[in-house]
Image 1 (cartoon, rainbow, N blue to C red):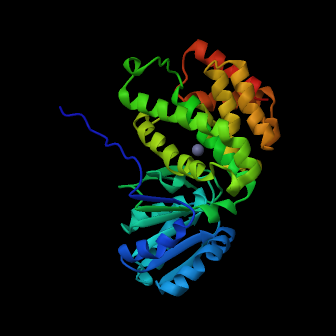
Image 2 (image 1 turned 90 degrees about the vertical axis):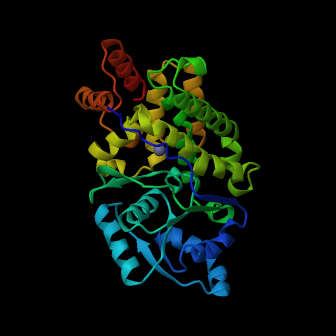
Length: 357
Ligand SMILES: [Zn+2]
């Protein structure tokens, strides 16, 4: 019997990044049918129009704009589909962070309309990833919606992204760095012979991301848009990171850092809502590294990066109750979600969580 083949879904149709990238937006809208439904969070849209309104004024490209509020839900995606149909829009444009971008990507899956993403920070590999991470109205995780094909166009404009709060920069840096220890979850990889080539591609690319960001984070955090490698950080976070995720998708399972994120969204929903995706992943990253038995100097280096960028460092910092009962509850979920079963692995996980207090 033929086994089901799941295709790799990697990259995006076109990726513009750097200074002046936004000027390509009207042309891409015209190429994709000529009328846009532009959807963004309130503050993201304000920043977006500061950069983009002269272009639309000169060019005359027609559009309808909508403000995204609340959670990223399938109901909201259906509302976007209805507006796009009622107003005869040919292409969806998502402006902002992960929540809005994933919501619009989901609307693109439901409607079949093409989608252009305009990320407003580097804290969002959603801009080019092949999956829309969905939530319910309360902000808890719902099943993800897979895209049928890649995001059509991503426009990652230097000046727009440089106006993002510094906190998103820090969160984005740690979220992307997490890919490397996560790619080594439960694996001993010594070279391409010791694993599947897809896994190896994932690992060496994740390593390149980790090296780049741990080398440049200080300049990026201090100097933001004037940092010497700012455009390379855009490329790293908004494209390279999602390519790594694309190669990881077949494994169909979370590693510890992102399992920690999911856990906090599901079971520490209200207090956890004050924290960004990457901030929660970062705490999970420390647990992951300890579980992987990384050297303590390496773990300390990551903690130092987080400290330097004023991020929460511990489960206590994000208001998670650290009684024995609550920790056991966390450990049980992390083990289930990241395929940790054997006794020695369970002990390592428990110790790793205790270190993250
Ligand atoms: Zn992430």
